[in-house]
Amino acid sequence: MKEKRILITILFGLILGGTLFAQSIQPVVDASRNMKTISCFVTAINYSGKRKSEIQYIFSFKRERSMMRIEYLSPRNMKGTKISIDGTYFYSYLPNLHRTTKRKIDPKSSKNPGKDMGLFYNYIKGDFAVRINNFKINYLGKGSVKIKARKGTRELEAYHYSFENGRAREEIWFDSETKVAVRVLRYNGSKLLLQIDVSEVRLNIELPDSTFRL
Image (cartoon, rainbow, N blue to C red; front, side, top):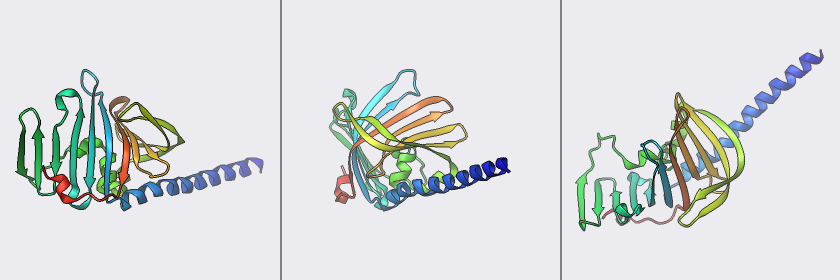
């Protein structure tokens, strides 16, 4: 009888835990759904090559027509380089050549600079809720995380999740206040491929369409 009560308690705990987990991801899904624009500072560290490389850029995104602008601040050889998408055209500016190029976007093309950001891109694009259905989701708890900022680091309280799909895995920390992803770690198996830190986040600000034309 005692063993039966213990088993019932465990099963009830598992069911309740699953319910609480389902509720815990919902604020993140809602925040993604309600986002219209974002402007932020991004540090991306690539571990997939022979040597670790780091870039920093200012990132702006407008969900309407998936408009995007990236302005690189480092490394030195990329500083001042800009790429932008206004929904119809792709622009690039190379400061060393003082030249801007413009070409029409092929709607059939799968190329998009934002896709390298993993689930963060799905979060800002608006299909996050659909995309995570393909992943096994584990909630790893709430705690502080130090992210790279424009100068030094910044410490935030964040919700920590793991998203797994076969060998692909992403660990994401969502800011406890805004529910925006502030750190993304992308893995292939146990190998770390990419780290993205997001700071200076401004949500749903006015971003005129002209922002995305160079």
